Length: 310
Image (tube, rainbow, N blue to C red):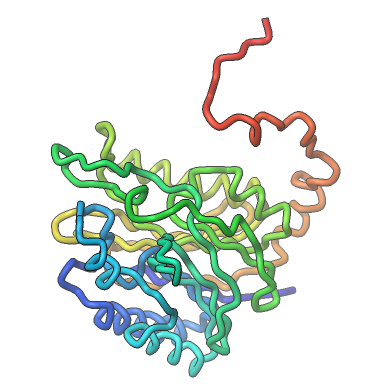
């Protein structure tokens, strides 16, 4: 039986005025708390070193790059997290804004081994929101302005005696992402998110948004027979609220652990990585039951079209 104690290290708000150095200090404290709970793998949120800056329309791209993006990882400001993880022998996932040498920009995440080395990188593919300025809106959701669509695909890595994949935030709403990881043998999916409590596009009760968040996590974990760790950055950032409800979900679809606050908080669970073995051999035995010849529309058609058979 393979057991791995995994922590979701939720962060409370990071404001515009908060520095990356201050954010990293909080991340180190969360790492230490996770270690004290016995965790060997820690999942941090999306864009963990900064506020959720895509809510702001900013025209000085050089200033945006300087304040919010990382051209190297670890950088001088973020290095203490990598150093502490290596000292404690803990692996982790963390999201950040990546600036490449070619001046390309991605909403990215890395998987870091207990020795401090970066094992893999993922660049967010399902970017939500818009690229145009909406001054009449309560806030902006400008991921399409600040980031390119990820170009690394959905991949998995051998990591701490598991097969682990990475996703980011809005990817959790797209079952194709999870299925591609599952088809590569994913046993763990790590995912960080920053999700506004308010729907920018149409009125939606906050409780309904959380309900959707929970049922998506449970269904994706179960239908792909994998452990799913979803970690929030949440609370009121400069007055704009994001919800928490960080989760560790078992391959059975059961919630193994869930956060209770919208502040810095660690939840952990000793995950039986082999728990999904029977599901992978029976109900979700892909080789026996999948019929990809009938799924062609999934990759051939982007938008929905009314195409009745009669």
